[in-house]
Image (cartoon, rainbow, N blue to C red):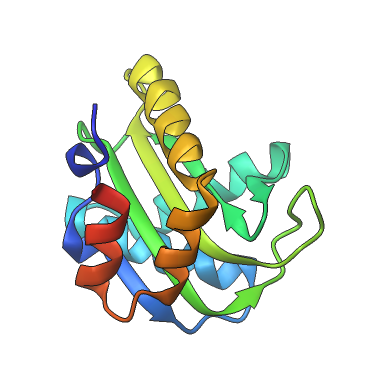
Length: 147
């Protein structure tokens, strides 16, 4: 699986203004719902429930919110680059400015884990993260993460 399989340009957002973790998850939910033709509130609740189990803020300004959905047969990724870092309860206590969310149909658990691993590995690359942080458009952000 490649990131292009779950992420599209219309689910990639640069310079997003959000004031909190909750607002970031709401934006992600709305973007995903628009793409999937499903209910944004259900997607939001799905990711919020996962956050209650433990933060998806993995450190170094990065979060990988994720969850399983019942409303869709398609996995979807949403990439946000925040205009300003937000508090996210990350493991290193630092604010987050890059969020790659993944929502996967409930029955695709193996795909979910493999894709999360691919995302985490990519975002572990400091050079790539610097490029993502300096991207000035949705298209540039998409091109960088999928190269």
